[in-house]
Amino acid sequence: MARGLMAQTTKQRFVEVTYDMIKEKGIENLKVRDIAKRVGCTAAALYKHFETMDYLIMVASIRFLDDYMMELMELTESEQNSIEINLAAWKAFNKYAFANPPIFIHLFWGSCSHLFEEAVSEYFQMFPAQAGEHRIAYFYTAAFTGSIRERDFIWLRRAAAEGFLNYDDAVYISKVNNYTVHGMLLEHLEDYAEPGVAERSTQECDEMIEKTIHVFLLKDINQE
Image (cartoon, rainbow, N blue to C red; front, side):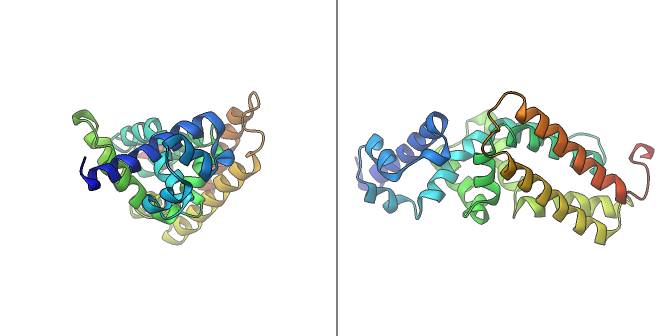
């Protein structure tokens, strides 16, 4: 096997093993030596392929977003106005995020969150999408250019252009939405797996975001 292909195969193996171990043990319980041992390499070998363990975890965690991204893609292709899409998008995000806060915090607010686009690109280079998955692979990068707050602001800026909000209010709301979701996810890092916690947290967060947006609406979204 050519050296380059062997290195790529080892890199893929690191991602696959890390994904499996996240499902088994959770992000918070991963250790470099345990991942390397299962791959059959030394711990030092991990850093030949990934700059940090956090970045490896990020690449491996991309696969956990498949259902969320499919739902988000369908929302953005709907006939709803920008406010309705924004609210529905947050509901979709919250549904999956509160079911697994450690993964979503790591991906969207963690130490490597600024490398999300790079991680997505690297993931799909290692695991090319099948023919029927090309649209969602492209959508990953299109949906998250920049931070999640920037994504939120893009939709709210469209809402301002459509007369639903003032531009300055759109900036403010995107910040508040981001802080609300991040803060509530942090609050439930320890108890999210307890019965009913994820569902109640999701509903509470959805309601807070909706109330925030409705305070600043300049016209009824149902008039469109």
